[in-house]
Length: 231
Image: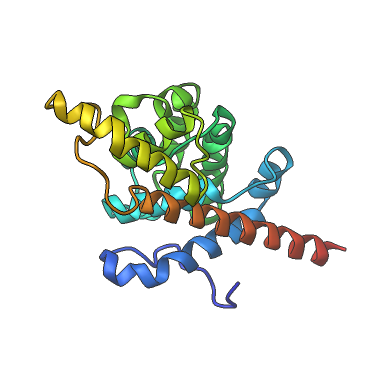
């Protein structure tokens, strides 16, 4: 972690091209501060794998909508939780999403205390209210983007969609059987394309997974350093 003090408003007013070189460090520094905070330490007692949902929240909020944490309102958080997450984030099992809202709740409690963000209280209330519905929102196929639909269908068909080999195997099946069927019906249903897929349909998804893994590794290292300091 840098010795420089963390600037929560670093991304405010920047466009994506200006912010892109800063985004990874911004996420890493914030997650490390969170992990070592009272809110983060309490959260980690229940969910030791920390950072992936915070990382995705910041990434999708800024990259797709230009939202930054200090300026976010309830409606902005709602867009991320109820539109971008179900469209972009694939859960291969229900357990994959069980810590999403708890992690974001703990984050916003931290942001409220540490940075006095003006909308934090109303955002915390929204997250508490939406928590019972989150799994259903994430499983609503009418919200899926094509990449998520592709990965979900391949997983249900028995392919290991976490590997390049599994993705390519299912892509061959899709191009040989599913796309021609859609084309013969002259329809693109629920985000499915009637055209064969060239290249990888899930590059964005793989990039997101890489960011999740990086965030988890960074948070784990931060917890180790913090435990060493306390000894």
